[in-house]
Length: 160
Image (cartoon, rainbow, N blue to C red; front, top):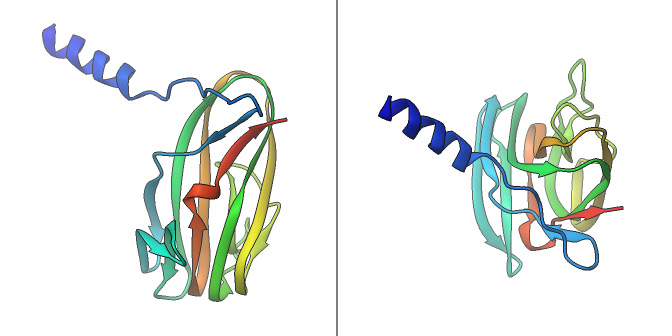
């Protein structure tokens, strides 16, 4: 019984806490976790141009990889904003997604995607939560080659 209790306590402690927004209705997104799906990828946190960044690189064709962060959100409209940089990124398209570098929620469609070469470029992804729930935020790369950096200091979740 003690083991079950301890396991239940650990599971409850690991669940995302409700997000606290500042007076502007924004919060920084933290606790990004790497997720490898297919292909061959480099997945790391690094420093580039003086900023901390989530770095994803496609080493082989048809690579899909991401960083993910789970947040507990109440009902409402939200935007995930920030900036990213790409280098020599050749998008890998599949039956569902156009490919490239993108930010979205798990199960959500791409609204902005990037390929080729971009210096630091802003992105916005808007979505709605219809019932209070955990939402998985996704910073991803779907590519045959190339790389993307997501500026972690710039990534904000904004309540609209």
